[in-house]
Image 1 (cartoon, rainbow, N blue to C red):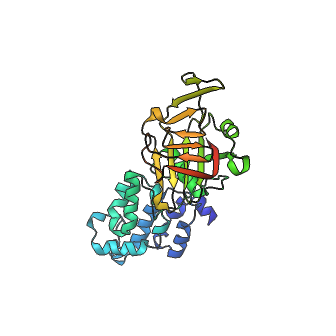
Image 2 (cartoon, rainbow, N blue to C red):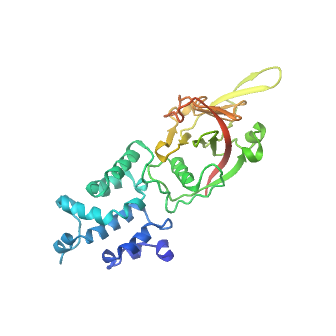
Image 3 (cartoon, rainbow, N blue to C red):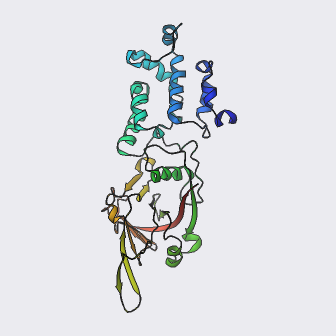
Length: 324
């Protein structure tokens, strides 16, 4: 089975594939190490599922088994739905592009459970995280040394970094832990020294809550240059500057997968507020962290990520983000 997973195309192209035992095919589709595009899995399942229909078998005798879904009747879709039902929970529909969805999934809407179909549409159209199809990418196994999130959420964040509507399998990212509050202490100098000019991911576990929030900056949390504004007092220099980027975002993983919020920067000139006093500062309001206290007030990012305007940190981690 492992050998098939490494190169499944020849197996799916076998002449005998349409008559393959359901349990064998299901065990293959369930595997996370199946190296194949999700849209191709769907196409092969259509081929297999259609072949299970008695009506299709009769109509295709001596003919090329081309599927013309425009000629299907309701009982044809019902038959296909019955064949595909066991496989539907294991298909990563959220990895399929809008174009492929339109051409290869939309025509079979009647064969897909309504809640699943609406879930796919919501994700592809307005980037609402899936409620039902939440499996991590098959080959996008993302290792992350975190006590705040698991690998499947790291895979979701990887997708957001790529700014894609499909969860990517390649390239993979490497998340290198640079700071953990319970290990390194809530120390500003330590935090600041490790999170300056590299692409960085910050994760926050909120105290007395199951919610996890965070933010990604491709330019770090501190990026001081000659364009910064400076204020000088009697004790020390104070600096502050807006740092521009189109690729930063903040987010919240809620109590349920359905409450996940992604908030991308909408005004790139106000993406990161780099100043001497803040730990991490997205938009100078959207997500601001100062030690164990933080605030969220939507302004320069698309969505508000918390219902409340303030929070207390239970755990804090940062990671340098690099492509493998």
